Length: 79
Image (cartoon, rainbow, N blue to C red; front, side, top):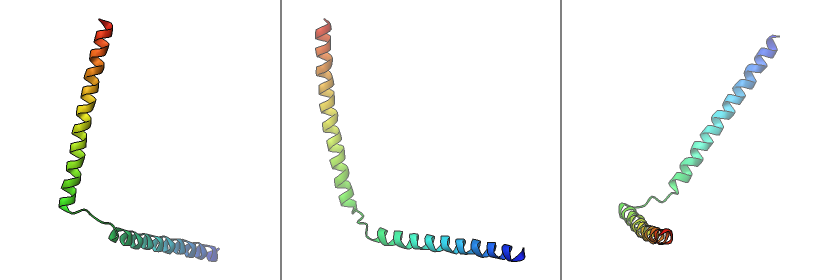
């Protein structure tokens, strides 16, 4: 019975070692991939933000105008 307990501990240790190796490999691979990432410069970030804000304003104006026209048409139809 004693040999069964020892075998169980060996299996558990092997599993633990496998998990630790997998974790270490994952962290190493993630770090490698992170080093390949191009982070934008502050200037690029500001430029991209300005594009997003500009397009948002244009779309907001367009949707506002479309809503106004649709509202007037419905009011005209209803009388």
